[in-house]
Length: 124
Image (cartoon, rainbow, N blue to C red; front, top):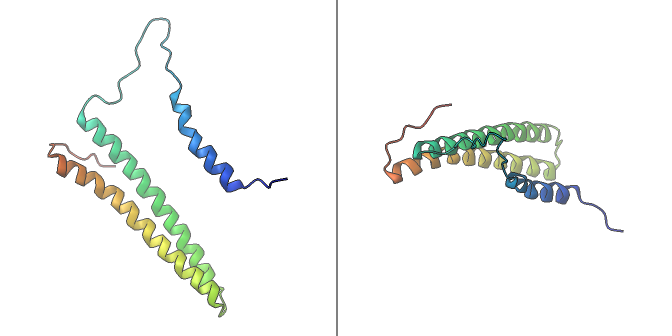
């Protein structure tokens, strides 16, 4: 009998999650139409900026957790070279997480700059 791998189950589940968004909107009996989410270019920039803010926050939180775990591993290594190497690689991954988060914020500014649009980046 095959063992179930929790990582695969979670990965496949999260991959299938966007399919839930394909549910069709059914207007009420009055025939109202759903509100329009994107009506202009600035709405698209607002959505992209909100996503970048979320990405930055999640990656910064992950980086803090990685650094704390790496510091614990480094302090408790007691001369074990393998544990020290693992702690150093975790700190490297934390730095990469911070860089990716900042890159997500920078991409929003690049999109606005290269498009030449006169759009103010919403703060927050």
